[in-house]
Each structure stands twice: as structure tokens, then as C-alpha cells.
Length: 189
Image 1 (cartoon, rainbow, N blue to C red):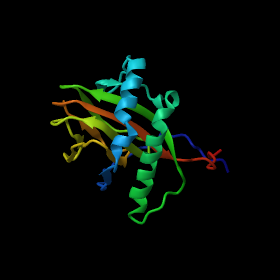
Image 2 (cartoon, rainbow, N blue to C red; image 1 turned 60 degrees about the vertical axis):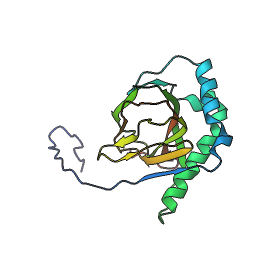
Image 3 (spheres, helix red, strand yellow; image 1 turned 90 degrees about the vertical axis):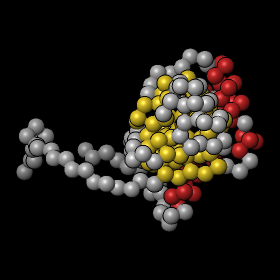
């Protein structure tokens, strides 16, 4: 018997389920030794053109990690932060994380990022290399906020809606998205 797999006549209903999605954050000890601010400023000097997106400040392209290997130690540190955060709650990853994309941002006074999310990424991660007094927090849809500090990593599920309100001070950071590796999983034929 052949089954009709067309969705043309299928009525799709929608229901919203509230689910708590954790946000993990902490400041890296000895963060100054990474000199991420210097790496970002050097990258920007060599790549002054800003990308266009929901971030209304200068930011690099999504493939910055492919263009500058100086960011790789920070990426590995952020990846390990995600493992430690989840496994610290007794959970285990079903497979390794893989980096999807990576970019740098430098906000000046008045610049912001519109509400957005990073789905289908498993984790979105921000690292704050240099923030001034009065810089904007990372704000989530439920109204909760985390005010960044120098050397802070913030990691959250890619479906979490977040934004950066107009800032009153400079804000230099990187963002990256990780996904659980699907290597070995085969598509349905």
C-alpha cells in the first residue's frame, strides 16, 4: 500500500508551551591574557566594512573564524563552557558540538541589536572583550537581563529571543553559534 505523503489538505494547529530555557554565564579567570579586544580591533582595521543584519553596529561577517585563526582559542574556550554548563546539571550531550558561525561586534553609544534568535543552533554564545560602564544588557523576551562584564561568557539555547537596547557606552564582543553534530545521522528516504 502506498501512502499519500502530501501536506496539501493537512490542517496544522498551533499551541504554545511555556518552557524554561536556561541561560548560563560567568567571567573567565585571567580573561585579559586572551587579548580578544586587540584581536577584534586588528581584524576590524583590516576589514572595516560592516555586515548588514539585525545588529545596528559594526560587525564582521559570519565566517570570521575561517579568516582569522587568532580567535580559535576563544572558540574552544566557549565550546568547553557549553559542555561544562550542561554537564554541570547532570545532562550529557548526545554528540559533540560543532561551530556554525562566528562574528565580532563593536557597539558605540546609541547602537543596538533588534530582537532575534539563532534557531536552529543548539547554543548561542557571546563573549565580552571590552564593555564600558553603562553599556546595555543582553535582554531576553521575558524581560530578564544580564549586564555584561569584561571577560564574561553568556550561553543560551538558540531559540531564546534576545536583543541589545541602545547602549550608553562602548561594547566590544564576539558571538558564535554551535550545533550538535549530526554526522552519522542519515536522512529519511
